[in-house]
View 1 (cartoon, rainbow, N blue to C red):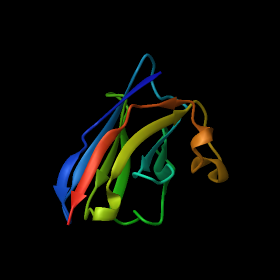
View 2: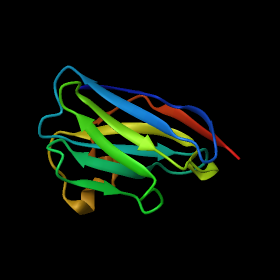
View 3: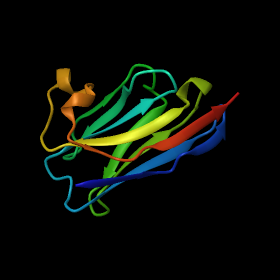
View 4: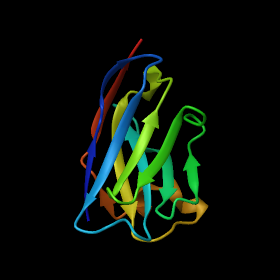
Length: 126
């Protein structure tokens, strides 16, 4: 599976961006797909996750109520709608996929994921 992330950019605080993660090579059927982010000088951190069946989503506390993860089966794409962006959201955002459903304790761990996209830069100015 190859993952292509896109949609990043420069936005003012309070603005919105919609990131996309598209799979090639196969579908996400049975996968868990997540977004992580990594700011300069910080460790990669979990942002949001969705089970490809669509019935289970998880969010980091820092983005709850502002970010929404969804998927389009036909387009083999997972989206991360980011609203009310804050300067603290500035980071490189990565999508990641695991070829199985993950229990809650594993969803937030980067080591649980087999496939990674190349990252897309999100910069939020104050």
